[in-house]
Amino acid sequence: MSSITIRNLDDELKASLRLRAARHGLSMEQEVRNILQTTLTAETGASHGLSFAQRINQRFKGLGAEALDVPARQAARPLPSFNKP
Image (cartoon, rainbow, N blue to C red):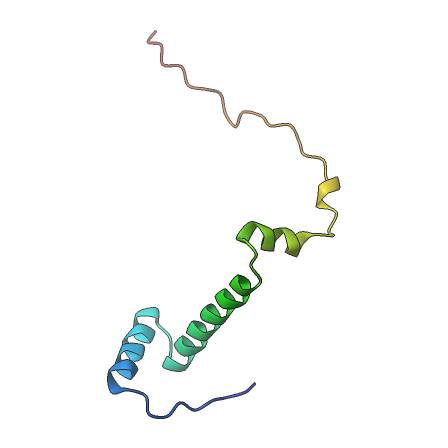
């Protein structure tokens, strides 16, 4: 794993990061890793110009799911009767 050092970080920004990490029950380092991961993952997915559905389709393409039989739907439970006896 690699590490980076961030110099000249604004005191207010560091305090905000510390509070955010505390709210999530994480260390500041883990909070920064989560922020970077979330931000860069979102950018990577958006940079390919694919919609969410297209990305899911690509992920599962080639697994042969199209060939699976889809069972007929059934009622989960009997419908209620609202007629008073």
